[in-house]
Image 1 (cartoon, rainbow, N blue to C red):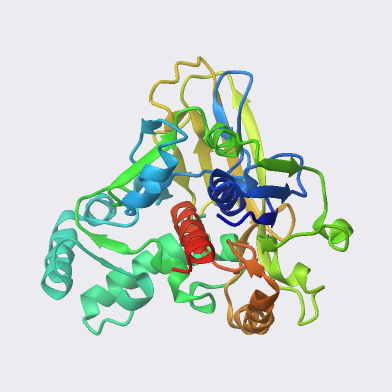
Image 2: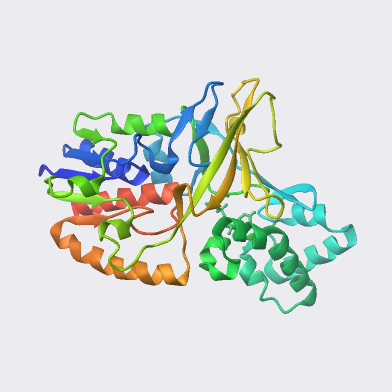
Length: 372
Ligand code: UDP
């Protein structure tokens, strides 16, 4: 097999998956990482109370791709965990995504019954409707419900989260959390779901345990880009940075997290509680609740403040940014003939979940190595 000399820029989930695949196929891989740790925004660590904390906000692994689950399962065992989120709405904790249980928790019984019947008649039981779709309904009762959910769940959360209104962002963003016409309180319905038993960082360390991989942390690609030699370069950093912002800066929504260690066993009913309307933060994560085995007497919480400062967390998918990205992507595609590829959430400016990042990396590897 041909020996590649591969440089991968960025040691996040995309870079690590590609590095593992190439290194296991006898290619020498160099990874360049700006931060002082691997794992990108999936990075986690065990704190002084033995609680695994997700430094960049809650990461719950879920996938319907058996291939992805089987692949990662070579590097980790899983804590069984089915993610449930509660939203603090009108002084009550109710299931998010908004479902029939949320409806009954927030509305008077007779009204809830009438709306439930209309929802089921119009959309069917066990279906999911994005809020922006539900708002288009012509039925006056369903319109009332859609406006209620829009106001109580989406409007203010999205303003805090993105700094803009739900209709000003790509509809796929709010469609991630549709209105659910069933009593299933889970956030995700994927067949495979869990939290890596020793954390994401440990899983990544095992993926990188290979003599063919060399990692340089604390290294800015910009400063060494003229010096490194490669047969194949895979860039997973921000695409606008790669091209020196020549078409303008892409906006990323950033976040600051206020971590607190509390001298109590339990802080909130579920691992994640959303605060769509109250306070300035969007959600609070209580990390020990991801781990059914954790017996710590204390608990660690992370309170999230999205904004324009902190770390880059999400691509801000509005019209302006999508237009700018298209121009960069045209340039990026041209570089394939120079064996430069762009992959991952920052380089493709996409709101990928972790499993999609892994799936795309496995696919890219197969394409590059076997041409399929
Ligand atoms: N969202 C909302 N209220 C909620 C939960 C989500 O308005 O209680 C909207 C909001 O715009 C958010 C998007 O749905 O950015 C996607 O939510 P998700 O939980 O998928 O975001 P992530 O987990 O990536 O932060």
